[in-house]
Structure formats: C-alpha cells, structure tokens
Image (cartoon, rainbow, N blue to C red):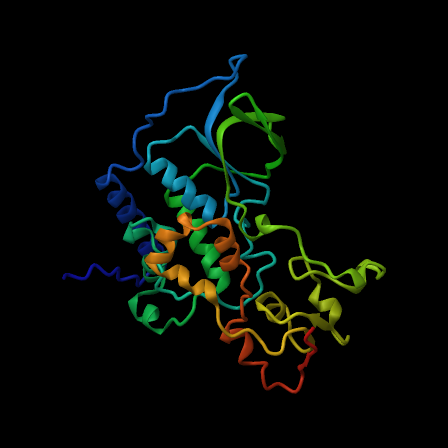
Length: 313
C-alpha cells in the first residue's frame, strides 16, 4: 500500500495541504449531503429547526458533522462558552495529557484526513508522530479548533439553553445570549459532556466553611494563591490527582483505582453495542472511577511532598 504521509517541514504549508486534502476527501464522498428534510413551521409560522445541538465541544462537533453528512442542514449548534474554549480541555481539565491512546480515530467519522494523526503529522511531521506518546491536553483543543474550522461547523458561542419544554409535537428552547428569547426544534441533542452527567458531588461537611477555603476540582482555582499553604484533596480518582501538586490525599477506598474501564470505548464492539444497553448497564459503565493517568501518578507516587491517607468506609 502506498503511503500518503504529509511531509510537514513547514507547519503552515502542512496544514494548508491537509485542509485541501480534507475538503477533497469530503467532495469525493459527496459531503455534506444535500438537505432532504421537509421544512416545518410552528403554529404561527415560526421557523422550526430540525435539530439543535446543545454544546459545541468534541461530541457536539462530531454530532453536527454526522447531521450534515446525513443531509440535515436545518440545525443550530449552541455553546455557552467563548469560541475556542468549548468543553473541559482549557478550563477545568488539568491533566498533562489525554488518557486515551493517540491512535484512536476520534471524531473523524471514517475520514482519515480528519483524524488527530493526520493533523499532527501535517504540523510536526511523521518522525514526531513516532516519538509522541500521549496527546498533550492543550494540543487536543488546538486540533478540535482546526476540526471545527475545516468542516465549517456553525457553532454559535455565548448562547445558553436555559429551559426546555414541550410545545405540541415540538420542543421550545429558552435561550440566554441570543437575539431570540426562544426557538423551536423537532429534536434536541444534548452534547453536554461531563457537565451533563449531574451536579458536583460536594461533601456536606464543607457547608459551613468560607468560600475561599475550599473548591471543587471543576472550579476555576487560583493555584498561585495556594502557595505555601497546606492543601488536602478529598478523593483519589483522576480529577483529584490532576489538580494536585504537593499535598495530602484523603481517600475512602483501600487503594488507588488502577483500571480505566472506559478504555473499552476504543473497541468497535463497545461503540457499536453501547446504544443497545439498558440504562442500568450504561450507568455501570459510566460510573466506574477513572484512575489517574500514569503521567499524573508516576512523578508523585514516591514523592515525599505527598501523603496518602486511606480510611475506607
């Protein structure tokens, strides 16, 4: 088989070539497909969207690409965050690298030129790809920004869906930050990521503490202000270790989690069959604790600046 590697000696030239290649690949696949869904209007002639996607992060982007590929163009993608800061990657995610292997195709939907692999080689060359171990977290966001741009996905930033209610056979979405106060849609895709799995689990004993004495791992934290102070982290799963530096971990379990059950998503059997699982099994899969990555654990597991206190229930 002939190799079609991009010789990215100059990063800008490499990305320009990849942009052209991705657009050519999509043209060969006749994507995006022509719209085929009949237009619908509300009782008073109000425009009705076929699909609204709540969230413009990784899953929102790939959902939009899938819709366009299926010939559904009457849609909107809404995200409350500023452009380029969708999802957790540059906000509350604080691990050094992604936990997933670099070889996963990600949101490419079967198009090789849209993979992180292709993007990385276009920027840095095939030799650097061979040396790369795990994907640096900020670099993943750079890739998603490129993915959005090259596919021309119409994400509308600074808009939040504040309420959803049925209206006839449609859904009425109340909006904040948009020109309209509300819109109608036939279907709503909730691509809200980890934020959509429920509220933060805050231990009751912090209720009486001043607000500047504690923080949740998903909060914006001024780490510089903690310099010279004794800090304890309650918990030892991935987010706990990702936020830690030199401190004390308070753990209820006997030992640190070491098996990431979600790594199974790299198997086609899991991705193909997950939709057919009942709610109980889906919850069992998604509620398993995520261990810290080796990148996060190895520098600190033998560090004298850390202590681990386990007190199982």
